[in-house]
Image (cartoon, rainbow over all chains, first blue to last red):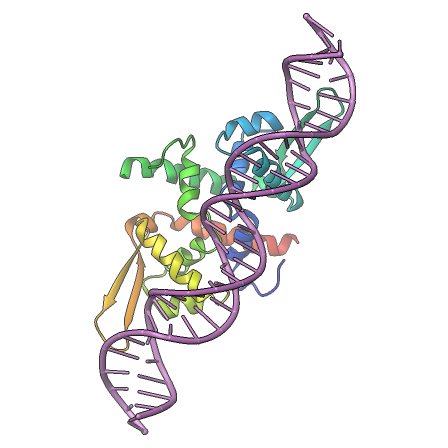
Length: 104
Length: 104
DNA sequence: TAGGTATATTACTTTTAAGTAAGTTATTGC
DNA sequence: GCAATAACTTACTTAAAAGTAATATACCTA
């Protein structure tokens, strides 16, 4: 945990309070995905931000990275238990965004 | 809605995918608050980011701003219907952050 | 040996978020 | 007339997020 955080929500935001991290986690809800496949699920993200975001999510224990020693390289990402515990939140955030389409 | 967004969650993140916006919304769940009181609920936020964030939340229709023509000035913020519809998500995000305290 | 494949990394730039600190307004009460 | 008050605004700076484009690896196949 960090220093001087008064509200648990504040801590949550330090882990996933960015534009791309929830998207990445969301697309892993259906199960592990190869790096390239996951990235194609989010065509708007740049290659750089994708790598940077998965690195940080891994560091924070929300996803894990599995490397297969083959050529060409194969890497799979999947949610950890901690990452999985965000499932209902991620689905709700997606549904909420969808409802907005109706409202506006 | 924005252009070229493939996933509803992406839209959600363009509205509240920052460090402070969910915090502000969260503290308004219990009802309207005066500007100063709301800000004191989030001591970590700077005056500037507070103003900037509430401006954007208002522009995006998540909160409303009520000005009382008195001296010294009195301004109240409250969630709009759209803002209120985030209630369960905001509470879940806060609970999730709280559980992390146990886990780590 | 050139091109393809998948997964990156690196260097560089731009944009956005965030912080610091001072100033503004319009009154009331001392 | 001056301090206090609440809610900002402005100017300036720093830090973080995000984008672009080129390069690296390491093998396979044509």
